[in-house]
Length: 159
Image (tube, rainbow, N blue to C red; front, side, top):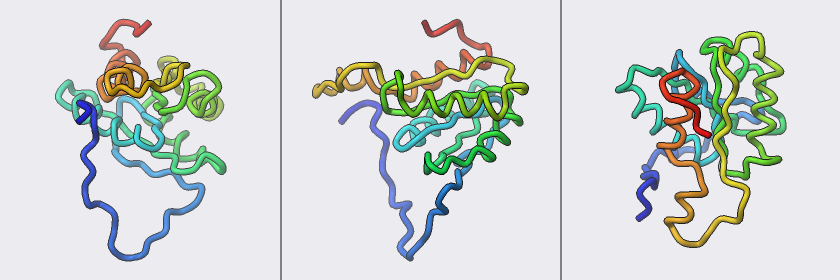
């Protein structure tokens, strides 16, 4: 089993349900930084937020759920509250979803930001088959936590 694997629970409802199209969901409330994460990265961001709780860093996690239409209002409200943002996606960092989401944050909340938006995404390379290589390429909860520490000023630059 891969070290960063996310345990899957039985949190899918038994009864029929509807996910509102074009409506983001606040998966975790926080006050220090907003993390906008997609798909599996939502779960990794929540794990990173739990790690950072012990360091007294409060992380709000937003799951956009749909990209078109994108719920810019929920993202804007969260970033205006926290004044900092991280975008986490599993796609390539260049020309990927993270670039669009980061630009959205700048468009809706630039005047509120205390730090630049940081993107955490896969490297610009094909994903290797070996688990160790995959861990190197795809964002982990540790990489997400380090980016959060950086944006709140508790860690030096990642590069």
